[in-house]
Image: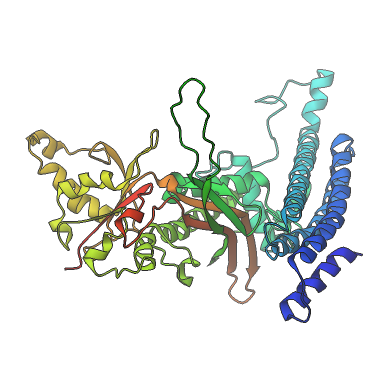
Length: 526
């Protein structure tokens, strides 16, 4: 019985309903007690997993049965840990340091338990693979021991019973792709795929990929890793932004903005100390994102790898598209999960400083904005682009790059480059294959403006590590079959956050403005 956790729930309910004057200190104490209670249960699960790792049963089926039990225990603990993490938000920082540390320790122990269970599963799968191989090649092994017959072509290690599959386009291993394809087929009711998974020691029990909550397809860790890796390769935001992990729904991102200064001293002089260290702190909040589609699933085993490739492409491409849309064109509305993208972050800063975005003079409120010569792309000059560097905070060791749409690159930047003095005819005829301008790399995305507009930001420049992406939750996959249409509905969900962090400070007073790590070129309004 989770008595301490129940007490915490009751306390939070009374605080929410304002029936009683419940202080933050009371909530902090209740959080600490509930955390101790839940942590003790997590440690029991950890001990069971450690025992399984130290001395696993010989039969892989026994291992998987034990893993199912452990997964169920963890599935029950996940909402408890999340509930405690949310309760920490009710506590003032001065009262809740211990509560916060306790909640973070509980979350870490739970993650440790999940990772160790994956190790147990990997061992069980390996044992089952060896057992299946020995069974399928029994006659060849017997011949090898007695010398009664020569080895089959390819040696004992050749898989004599599996059909030949074409090589996967999206997975690094055909074996991983095959497992993914058969799991999808099994989830859609294919009995042959279910038997294949059972024979290979792969459980089809429903579970989430990251927090083991019920409802999703139990997908092997290596499959999830391949899909996420492919997503990171397809999405621009994941390649150039700073990516951090989030253990709770909110993470504080801090940057020191003030502190002690150096000084010169003479012999015997006293040193003046300073305690004026200040930090700029912003909140990175995780958002739910989901993608879904309907498709037909082939049932034959020969199509399993093709099915896995199709699924990986759909997941990776769509996830990358969702994130890039939010990061490069998000306006803080529900269409992009409330995430504010890079260009709109400048507009919001100007408006928060009391300015009007369509007033050109107010654009100067943000020192990271470079106002172009005119209101159209054709009026943008090379000097406009080159001057963007002066709108950046100068820091040693950072990399500077451009981001724009393909339309702006080819219709304006390339035109400026080829019209520069000294360009040879051969350069125009042969072209320039590098995506560069002024010696800096240019990244292209369809989520930046694709046509000219007034008061629009077609070009970004600087260190894109100034924008932070947060990983809160891994990929969860759920599927359902429509008996009438024979189509499969597949939904994938994940959680992430986006934050324009090192974005400078906008102000109507020039003395209060501070440049950040990103500069933007904005067209005039008129």
